Image (cartoon, rainbow, N blue to C red):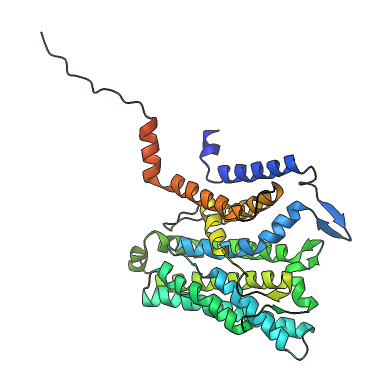
Length: 343
């Protein structure tokens, strides 16, 4: 029992279950899933579908943080990916065709890879601190997305493109299937090969890894490229779900959700060991928390306050100094024993 309580996934899973049960108390049909027109519907399906972009971005963020880095630009990359894809469809002579949608997706993916490579270049080749390097793109990215859309919300009408975020396949939303495929492929590549161990070794001690013969620079570069790819696909989901590109609001604060999901899942911000399953549970907690706020009728603005409180609590629990201070307060104060003096 004590070993179960010490497992790093026990408390996140318990928190997720409690959130789901809390919603069930206020909505009797919250946990029910029904079939309508051959598709699965229900609050649980909505949580998975709406949380798919966060899961994707958190997946890339996990590997970045495992390498002792951080990527604050994922929200801006998602906005840019949605902007370039929708702008291409909007300006295309055949905006409703499958070929136009495929080209738009390819352009967005290339843009995400290029922006991820730019972040990786600044961090691994130039040596800029990750938080500063990605902050540059976080600040300039939305301006770049607004330049692409000319400051307007670009609406498109393409059924193939819309299917990415709002379509169904085999009864499930396509966005869930994309997130599940990305999760499975990432797990196979990082846990069934040496790639995951190499990322962890770079995160634990990059200097020692380099002295041991590892190409730490290439590994660091690779994880940022992967993060950019995940953010671009998430941007496609967000924009296709609403069939529009909103440079101001698309992916807003999603970097905070991704970091929070990674931390809740047990991955340390100091780098090193990581857990993809923990990140998945963390992302589901974030999305369920958002749904809970709406279910309870709390104003949407309060969602950010809840998330901020969770960040603070989790960071305190992960801090060794905070745990040491708490254990000292709980430990009873005992007087030092006095040496006996012979009579």
